[in-house]
Length: 147
Ligand SMILES: [Fe+2]
Ligand SMILES: [Fe+2]
Image 1 (cartoon, rainbow, N blue to C red):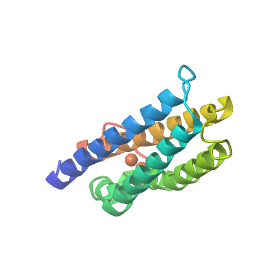
Image 2 (cartoon, rainbow, N blue to C red; image 1 turned 90 degrees about the horizontal axis):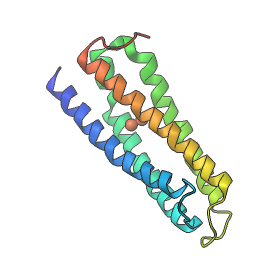
Image 3 (cartoon, helix red, strand yellow; image 1 turned 60 degrees about the horizontal axis):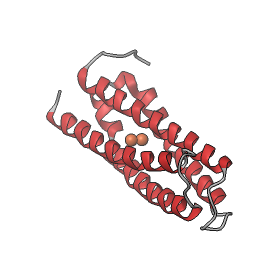
């Protein structure tokens, strides 16, 4: 593995780890076992949105696409598919914030909003896991299927 690819994979790993911590916070808040107010949820969602914005820029401009394509051009379709998911994830977090903001900040989070947040967290987790796998495949050789 090339040194730049290794350090990029490590940096991506760190970024993902810190993002996962924020996703865990959202999960805990919407698990139903704790009572959290909408205002707290909104604050966390806005922080995650900002973190995701930075993270997506890092991946797009950095970017893992260049690294993957340089090392494993046959993975280009999966790479492009994952980058395209950024738009969907960005739009859906805006929707979540919009839906949650309808309630007053002190109100408990509705079951419907909790469910949407949990679904969204699942989507983002799946996205990050697929990226980790893709970068690992590109850096470490053929451990997965080709496009
Ligand atoms: Fe991504
Ligand atoms: Fe990512």
